[in-house]
Image (cartoon, rainbow, N blue to C red; front, side, top):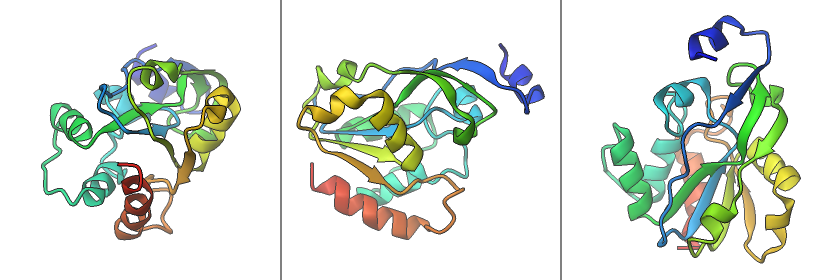
Length: 178
């Protein structure tokens, strides 16, 4: 189904497949997981594509970076340079628009793709929904000795947290594993 059709069916569930792969290499030390790509991210075919999502600002702050992260190649290189793997919990689901609260009929991603290829020391969920989905659908990975931690969401819907406060918590948690 075309993205335009999804927008037209705002109040109807649409089955959507995650169409772009994870970012990682053998040097990755931490894995950050989102729930499922937003409509904007699906349009751009990369993570955290909505300009109001604060993910890229927070991560740049975590690593004290002044890197320009304007395009996918720059973002991918930034992640790999800082030993960060990035993926989503969900491979496909039924969803209305970008609303995590509407997600149902979940098929999870196989985390072994990354865990077998890299020395992941910790898994971080970007927000409560990603954490809950990971616990529910990826339970087997919760028992392999890798800590799984929930970080406050970078979504603009998490308005109680500004970029500086988010970065402070993210930095404290992430840097302990690098």
